[in-house]
Image (cartoon, rainbow, N blue to C red; front, top):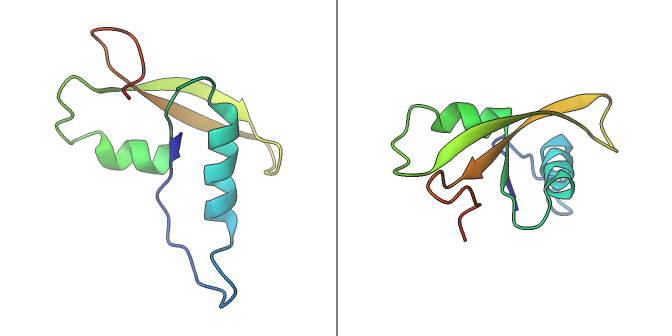
Length: 85
């Protein structure tokens, strides 16, 4: 699962563009129940009260469709060390 924040233009034939590609890439990078967030989404949430949820920087991840690596963040529940369901 993933979360990304961006403005997505409607091309008249559905939703397309780099924001959708970024979201798909982050989803592909996440494994077995992980929830990855983009830097844009993590930045928006950093000042919010998340209860026991924590946003953890998991470093740069190589993306297949984009050039270079993208910094990813994981949404985790610190008391159990697992991703929330």
